[in-house]
Length: 339
Image (tube, rainbow, N blue to C red):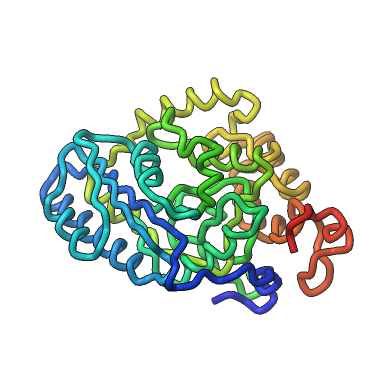
């Protein structure tokens, strides 16, 4: 539940899409190939639940399920046909990045959502909240908090001291449920298919921010991530061997953003990953502290503090005045076209 003094309450109404004319097309990526019949049946059912939840949203128009499995699934195709979802199989196995790119290029809506098959978009109202933020002219991607995930800043937390689930601009994100203006995906070339098991998440953040757009974690939106369930079902196409290859590829492609002791060996202390000076200092300390235990402790402090130190809207989160209002400096420096 959004708190009254969260930044979300300050955002101007940019126009809630008319339910009669939905502008958000969704891609669901069915990329987790379980080797056993029971595992495949389980993942098909969670995928079906995700699709049915999407269909309940008034802002969602077209939905494409891209099945990256080696062979087509006739049962899943029948489910898609019954609820008005387009089922697409390339005729061979494809990876996560290729699945996303295949899907969004089949859509015509001006806004695109990318969703993994281990995400349940509940409550469905989160999709409208994400879309409203993605429609802001300075935003290139909006994404929700998750109950479970690989980037701890994105996790739903409760605090008795102050709200921590706030709208902010963290260093990174995960490609689990993300909403983009279509032109942004076109400009960055979609999800980087040079990576097979990881790193396309921070690479996407880097490219969007290099365009001058913001990547925003939305305080009023959350979703359920059942990645532990899919891992238990087996058959992940995202193996550690592929992740090691991706890590070497990232280091070659982005040597300035490599860190020996950063999360995923990414230097989040460097801009444009870090979006404020305060969080940049914390990331730097967590990556350069002299001992592993101290780096671990500082990393956890940074991940918890990051939402509060990078609040949006504000120019790179620059200072905020009383009651959460942007400070005079932030209002003066804010780019044109933002409220």
